[in-house]
Length: 57
Image (cartoon, rainbow, N blue to C red):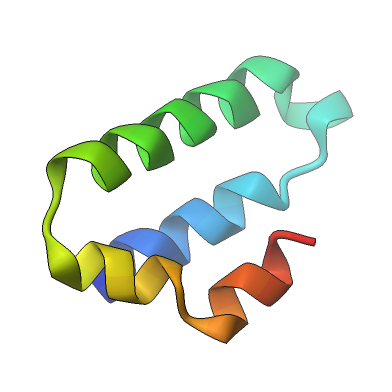
């Protein structure tokens, strides 16, 4: 589901770039962009949820 996918993306974005590399974070952001552009309203609602936005800070 969209909620599970974004949960995994959040985990990837919080990885230490010194251990896992900046490339992993870059690919994760690219995936997030693709989901935003190609998936429907459910993904958009999950992205706009305050908990997800709070974790991006």
